[in-house]
Image (cartoon, rainbow over all chains, first blue to last red):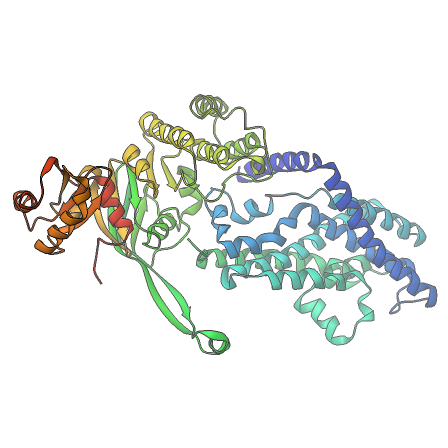
Length: 263
Length: 337
């Protein structure tokens, strides 16, 4: 019953948001092109590096591109559906977050679904193209079961990144201005985009256990690029579940002690 | 039914010494100070009442509204609205209320207004027939049909307010909290909003809790007002009896034969009577308005004036609501502490 109601509200929001965003065609195309160019720069960097070395941290060129594409898809999904979390700090500073507490729907749902960002679709398409390209060169076997795994792992990776951003945002219930924390998580996410083997041990530890950004790209994609099923790629699922519940608890605790700024 | 019993709320604020030194010091040593925003307030509001919540900025009005809408938890006391605790049962409680915070929209900023309305319909499970009937009524009263296809961000302040008010009443809430619903609006839109509020109250018995700094709003809408100052209730009762707050004052209007002598008369009156006897003297267009306390009588005042000047005419009146409310906002009434 509750799920049906939320689904109906969400579909409505999705529909009208996309419709209203696409009315600004110039806005959509310019930001889409910008997003793709940003991605292409990192891609060219990888390309030039591999002109000089055969392996990066023990990972081949096509494997690296595959990891990159997995990361691009999972973060694009975040960008399309949950990008609103990024601007929550404004509401904490201005005290306008109270708006989201005044209706009989979950405040996080209300906030996250307020805006949907279709320009992320351009990045999503780029990610899918890169995955097809690297997958073909790696001779990946796209069996039905592998596709199921791909979808589940991608959703888990998106959920992990969104949970980390939500936890950072929820700190705003305590510290008023969570901008720096949100921006730290956002800027650090690129650690998940490259083979983790290129980093030193301290960094590896941090992006595995502290701020598990390794699970947004690298770890889950090793499920496909390695011949044997590896433990860390499957850990993506429990990590996603733990972070999802942690994020709910932190948000709830924050909301309970929230004192809005201003009058 | 709204019941507040002995409700208090305090905030901690960090006190810091002035200057850069003080700021650096406050990073390590925090001097917390408690500010009592609301002190033991009590009131009961029955279904279908329209109540104005008044008080100067910083008096505790906003804190009270935030506790009543379930945003803030009270430190002490009990809040029971429609049989629920607004803070603990927020999800169920908010189904029955509509809220307008005049400064901020409750609609979806980027979406056309009509889509916001439709989302609200889904959130509150409003029946389609009832929803259409409401939209028709809102259009008749507010004329919003020409603007509801525009995104909220393209509306003027007045248009946005009309839509926000409509949005707050769309799901037939039992209580509507309207925090400064007419702030910054022109007279035409103000009167439309007032008419809608009155109509909702009459037709659907919606309880209205209103805060405003606009005296004409209060006069047009509120039978009962609750005045909050420095966190406490200083008046709760009929609007018409609010003049009791300033005691049995009277106003005397003096029309002099020779207007040039106004200043002479002012000094003559001021030298004869103490400041707590003659409260103030206002020079109006063609007369002097003298406000006296109950320490002297009108005849004492008139006797003195007639000894000094020749007058054409004079009037005597009770203090009006506007004067009292001005005093309240100026912080000149209320608890001394």
